[in-house]
Length: 336
Image (cartoon, rainbow, N blue to C red; front, top):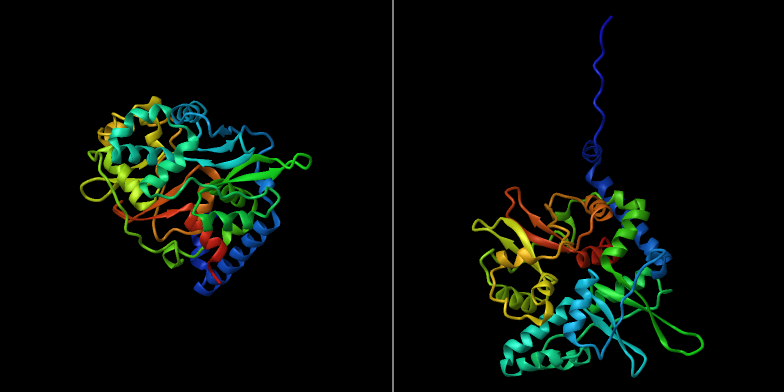
């Protein structure tokens, strides 16, 4: 009797290699169209968990206290509420705290007033240093997810509050905050057509484009990184070694822990020392190559919390970055 060697099981990569470029192109377009229809058929309400906690801050609250509230509750943003007008007043994010730092660096003579600064005073801070004002875009929770995505991309916001209205009093109600990550994870969990997105990233407009990135090293002072975040309007700066290899990332939210309690004297620390104070909730650094596929990235989003993927070459050297905005923009407007 002759033993027959068991056949090895086909791998997902074997399946991809068996497809012609024409078939991959065809499937990609079908998959993108199906995801768009999915986004158009669902509302923002559909994405919300069954139960959740929402923290809303009044604009009369001191900025210093608001920072402590964010850190104590392990959140990086919160809707603002103007109690005098009974209306939504914008979204507080880490960028607003960076703007405060920039303001006092430009006007050191006013630093003694930092403890009296309220959230309502942030608009004057932003006007004084000439940066984008606090995010005020919002959307009704019964609007489609597609509309929410478009509004986020148009306003360049990574999250958008859901605002309803009380039928009797006509007062606004802050329902929740919708993030790009939550939308993409909802798609990854519920839309099987993400598995059809098999074109390599290098062949996708907006995703395969190589971007010129500002970087820092472990020895760079945090204050220099703050300037880079502001100048480039980004939420993170990649950290590289002497060979240009990606070793970590310094995020805008890392600054929150550094200035906790109104302490602005630690901004001269090196990035390496500052990372020792990083919040425990840090999700890690996610990377990909230009040969990876969007199907793989969506699977990663399904399993892990992430805000961006840094593109590296075979040697681990930094090439570019793909943000969640880039992915949403491709899903909504790519492959036409």
